[in-house]
Image 1 (cartoon, rainbow, N blue to C red):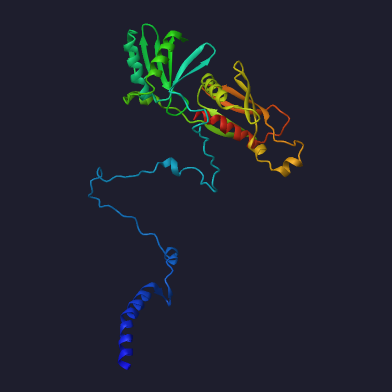
Image 2: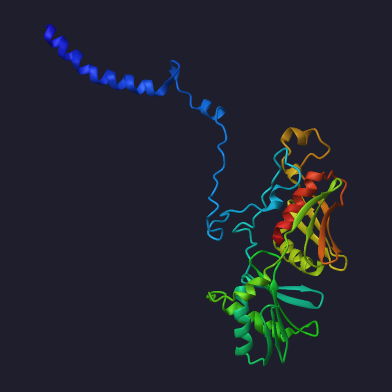
Length: 327
């Protein structure tokens, strides 16, 4: 009997030794090793120094840090970042490959492609229609022909381009009609050809939303006519929901829009708040969207045109929504 017990005990000896060695490696001062303490006791190591005899041209900063990144006051708290509102698929705001814009007697085309992709199509159009090309300057985005000047520039929305057919600053209608038909026929099978030089035309500044006192406004680095045409196009498409958002009137002579808009504050009222308020139902309110030219840029403001409360947060919400059409 004793021999059987001895054999069983011997079987457990290797396991006991392994366990003891494992616990010894995981313990310190009689306790399990909490590795969080290692970080509190860590000390900075001296920086690596390359020998003086090194080839300076071969050893440079792989990821240089611009000096501007470390200048100025340190941020003490997290900033409130609101993502831009996307134009969701199915909302009716998807851009066609070719769309027309118009302000007064001026018309132009907006192409849903960057300038590098549109430039070869303009060259092909001018040669296929035998317009008599007199000058072609890709750096200026200009093709001069005997009938009209084809002008190309980046549009306000990222990844899009604007094309004009002009002569003496005036729109040449038959040229623009022919170009619209030509580009529209190629929308289903766009060529992958792209002009590297024409991509340099995509040097545009960024739209900014800022607070001025108690008011919010958007600063758009484009002339007011271009901004008006884009907003007129997208407001007519998107502000079509009665009781939620609706385009009531346009005033191109003053660069203004009058809209009915239900703010997020109004939409978020719970039933109890509705019962104990003057307004027993959720309602939109009239807001004036005003475009003010400021040199080569435009300032967009939202001004309350009703007797309902229009807070700074409401103003910012509407400004951000409308400005998202131009991103």
